[in-house]
Image 1 (cartoon, rainbow, N blue to C red):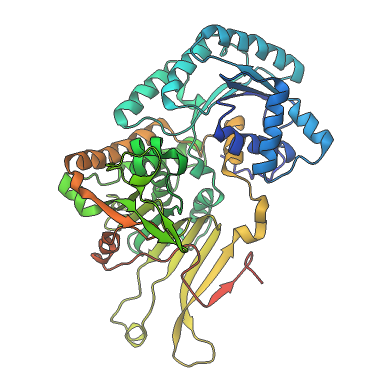
Image 2 (cartoon, rainbow, N blue to C red; image 1 turned 45 degrees about the vertical axis):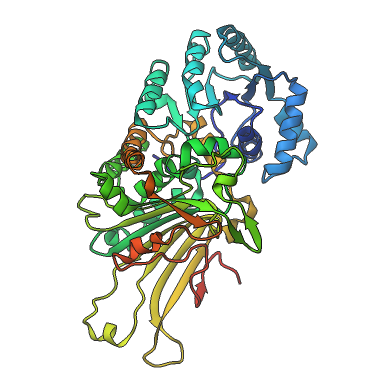
Length: 518
């Protein structure tokens, strides 16, 4: 695989993009702004068309007005050049569609032939299903039966999470899709894989000679992955109460980030070889053998009423559309191990939750300290070396080392160096959806999840869900605005570790290198 920057001026091959759920929130907040940014940067040439599809009636003009409003509110570029906006908007059409009626798909096929001729498109089709998972199968069948897959070009199906509710439902869903599309035609989006610093994990590991030799149990003490949110469930109470943190965040985002950190170097920089190594890492996860093991290594929390910045925050059970007796977890933390040669004995601590103090996604690699019995370590209280990969909202890399304190003899202090990518690129950092739509249009599947990745992740988390069903007493409460249940700290303390502060709160004595503030 050749790595292609989103800033490279390589236009995707011409295609018709079909946005199912075009009047929904995802399209308004993410998809329309992403398409305009790609067009603005030359990633979409003039040989494309976008068909918005939803039940509600809408004219092409109304649809384009919605897109203009979406770009004005959510896009990193503004539609301020009249000529450019008009050219972009002319590629968009709308069609009201009942997805359960195959005749509507036959009409869509006829419209597609007209769009191919109008914009000189070679029959390529990209179907983006911003729909509930239970609709993926019926839409796929009607795409086939309605003649939508009979063009001379390629067909690609892009689907959003969640991919099933557990392993069994995911298998049924995959079986439906496999009747219509080949695995290489299915692009399962996990938008965290589109984030710049998640993609940078591979480059950081495999293109720096001083990291990979240390990336093992001989040199790394533990790995911490934190994905925290300050918001509650907001208007998603009805959905979230049936899902919870385990299914909403752990099965997809956190498993994918863990696999990127733990994977072996691929034999080739090819999408399938990279995804092969991610699957091997997920297969190495030590499964929990019993409910007792789950309770010893996993923390299940739910936020109660609390306070943040002087504002009182409601508890989860007081949120709209949430069962007042709900046992759904809004917080998850766990200690997991990978039983392979590279990582044997190294604990991976993962945590995610809502109503936490800060919004951040970070990976902390804590290296083993120098031996305690050598003279230098006996004379000084040496802090462990850290490598921190900051994914969101700040993007960058942070390294902590020990160095002599300037102007003082025989005094050692921790010194931190940081590369702040956000500071360098600023507000024009490409959104994850831009990268992923662009990749799907080019047939670049590296940062999409393959079926065996999905299945392996579900296999791991299903054991946890099963243990929770056996023991509802495992739920622990934490005040909104705190860092979760108290036992979360105890989990690391048992091994002689602690959670490192996140989101740039940790260290003084920072030496800023390229990208940092002046």
